[in-house]
Image (cartoon, rainbow, N blue to C red; front, side, top):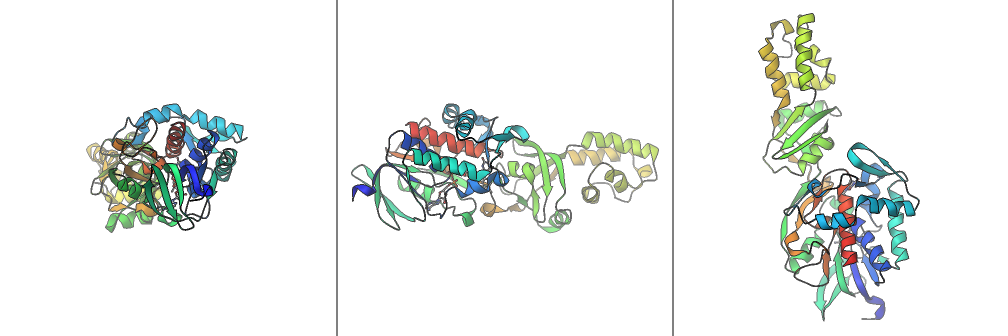
Length: 396
Ligand code: FDA
């Protein structure tokens, strides 16, 4: 193999983690090559945050992540914090705006973050080869040989950053898991995360009929509980409340919703009953909730929508608001990897060193970013994991 195809580090995947790692490793004096089958680098960064890349979250802590070992991410997250990435952005003249719950968005749009990652790669003389298929990996004389659609390349280190299974249309593949298995790593079963719920039958039709309506709720599945907005859609439930709980949801489990207006609503319905006893129940509800949502809740709750308030006992009103505070429903499923923002599960952290992301089985092999069994909440946590894990591996 000619010298032109021999590197210190080969990075698979020119996404968030791969590009960030390549820049850092290159600037530490390593000869780095990045390979990706896509035509453009970092497409998920491009579309993230509605085009403004929610690049981190100021509330980053290990308990904002899912995974079999919740302690695993602590070391990397502590050694590369949101403020480190903010400093890097500042050095590139990029600014940000803080939105909901510590979420930081780039004022100059996602493309500026990609350009910054590419500039950092350039600074470290890292070479990036796009539109390159990876057909196999072998280990020869302590080096990794990567067979590609153009030519074979070899590296002393192999850093796998090809992400998870979310959005196959954008080029997501299970390559990282295949490589992990090939080198003796376990995979924690994967499933789509941060993904809308789907509903079928009558409830599905009712949700479709009020699609576009949003309401603040407390949504819970198992032990996870999120106070966020819920959005009704033509296929089921979306919005941050649904996306956050979806990462914790297992097929067949119920989802519990508490409409956050419930307590006020009880007092308000009692007062309306006093002042306007002839008013219908659904009309009274419409004064406190979006009209289409009021119609749906009156339809499925324990009180007939047409009932006059005068005919309702306080106990009946209590029963209705109790229903709204624990509305339990079982999704048919989720929209799957087609629209999921992340993949929950992945390469088991048992086989990785938490300080360096290096394989415990094969020296020189690293896994970083979303392919690892570390999955963040909605709100910038997944990019922070991509930066932090890439940084940990670069310092190794
Ligand atoms: P990433 O997916 O970024 O990169 C993987 C790279 O590997 C890609 O370039 C891909 O082409 C390449 N690749 C895959 N298979 C390959 C193969 N077989 N051969 C060669 N190359 C291959 N997170 C967040 O924190 N804030 C946000 O605002 C958003 N928003 C958001 C919106 C949408 C629509 C999605 C789908 C996702 C998000 N995310 C997010 C999640 C975030 O995008 C994700 O967690 C990171 O991009 C993961 O970074 P990685 O580098 O690990 O994978």
